Structures are given as C-alpha cells and as structure tokens.
Length: 393
Image (cartoon, rainbow, N blue to C red; front, side):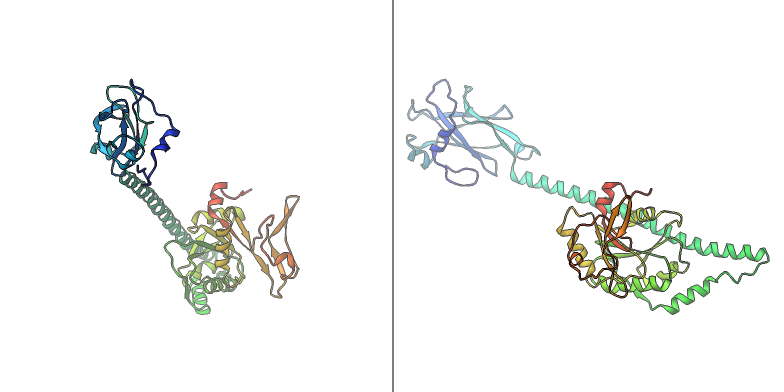
C-alpha cells in the first residue's frame, strides 16, 4: 500500500502495531494515510467471513461524518494473502473540513462497533496550511512595515528637531549680538554668521554621501575641535564607505561653532545637536536612538578610517552572532598604536597597546578585549536595546 510519501509499505509493517478488534476478533484493517487532497485510504477485512465486505464508519473530531464499504481491489492486499484483495477503501473528506484553518482528527472504525481500525490521525490540507503560512508571513511583513514607518516618522521628527536646534544656534548668535550692542559693548568678539558660512563653503570642497533607504551601518562623527579635522574625517568616510549601505551623522555637542555648517558642503550628511552638558554616555544613547543601521559606529574627528573597514566590520558582526561591540585599532601619525581596545582595572580603563608597534603579534589578529576605546568603536544596536542603553552614570 502507499503511505503519505507515496512509498509502497508492506502489510506486514502494520503488525508492529497490534490493531483493535471488533466483536468478531478476526476483523482487521488499517487507515493507511490521508492524501494532500483530503482522501482517506485504508482497508478492512474479516477473514472469518470470506467475500463479505466490511462497512467502515469515519469520524472527524469524534463525530460521525460518513461511511464507506471496503471493497476496492488492491494488489498489495492480495499479495499479502488478504483473500481476493478487494478490501480497500477510499473516502473523500467533506469540503468544509478541507478549508478549516486548524487540524482535524480523523478516526475510522467498523460500523456499529467501537472497534477502531487505527489510532486517530491529525490532518490539515497542505494548501490550507501553506495559505495560513503565507498569511502569517504577510502579517509579519505588515508588522515590520508598520514598525519601519513608525521608525522613519520618529527619525523625521528627530531630524526636524536637529534642524530646529541649528536655527536656535543661529538665533542665539543674533540674540547675543543684540544684547552686546544694547550694553554699548563692542561686538568684535562675536563672529558674524554670514562670515562663518562663507568661510566654510569657500574653504571646503563639496561632496555627497550616498543615500540608502535601509542603511546597515550608522556612523556618528563627533563635532569637536577644529572644523577642518571634522571635514577631513567626513571626507575619509565618504571615500572608504564605497557601496556599503551606510548613513553618516554629525553629532554636535555644541563645542565647535562652525561644525553645524558642514551639512552645507557634505550633502546627505545627517546632523543632530545634543546638549553639551550631557555625559559622553548620554550623548551616545541619544545618538543610538537616532540610528537606523543595525551596526552603530562612533568616530572621533581627525581620524582616517582604513580602506575596506566597513566591509570588515560587517563581516565581524556577521560571523560572530554574540558579538556586541568592536574596538578599532588606532594608530598615530608615526604608525604607533594609540589603542587596540582597552583594559580595565579598579574601575578605570587604559588604552591597550599604547606606544606599541601595530605589527606586534598581540595586535595583528582579532581578539577579545575588556573595553572599547572612545576614538573609534562600534555597537550592535540590538544589544544596546537589550541592555536598555549605556549607563549614563
């Protein structure tokens, strides 16, 4: 006989599972399988009554659903010694049972007895199961889409607040200028905004970061120190990111007056202004809430990332699922190490490898470190969310 996978199974196989008997102990049989189309196949035979065809009753979830007579010829039955072999049966499940969105339990017994032919069989039509899987998948996609829309809405609101902060900076300048003038003091110490804009746009060549709908990496560059160093780091990121789906954001804590003007020369550069009074951890947390990418990188100004660093970073996180943070190996202008991660002792951290040669054995291969250095490090956003953010204390 043919089982669910379409493989011929000998009758003797059923002897491993003794079958219940009806009032006449010689009656035997089995429910072999239910096809994907919902047709029940089995057999029933009473060797004490040769030539008599057994009537079989089918039950669904314990309720009588129909009857059939086991009189179909099956060569495998005849070869197994079941008389003339005409003791097979088939019974199509009712259509209403085929479209149910849940499993049903099928049972067969000798009619007018309690003798079961086989243990109850659970069944769900494959096309229904497939449809339900597709519906579930679509529902998951819809939830993901809603989440993405909500995230983009939050990002737009955050970006709008960042732009508002930029205008606040400019308005503060004019407010301070008015106050100085009203007091009769010289405004010479205040640099005109127009002059600052002219200096930035004329001193730095314009360029554009690529725009991606779903960046994998979010890079935050600290806006501190000389504006030319910040610009050089942005240019280096532009050149080294290549085709890597990434977004770059300028993280302004209010330290550099001209940093807020860099989006005038770096197209598609996101800009966010955080409170200067916030701790470094608080500023990082604020940046993480703005991030879109799965991997978030923090980069100090004045650094020049190595070629292919983004590909290597994605590979490191991809190959090590439990990796939460990555420390970069940072070298000075003389090629000596500034840090290769950090070590911790007594609640304090220190740069690992400071002043050492980067080609020394401990620093040429990836390894576990106790902490990351602040110059350049990366976090997996899901781990940050799991931990509830960085400790701002």
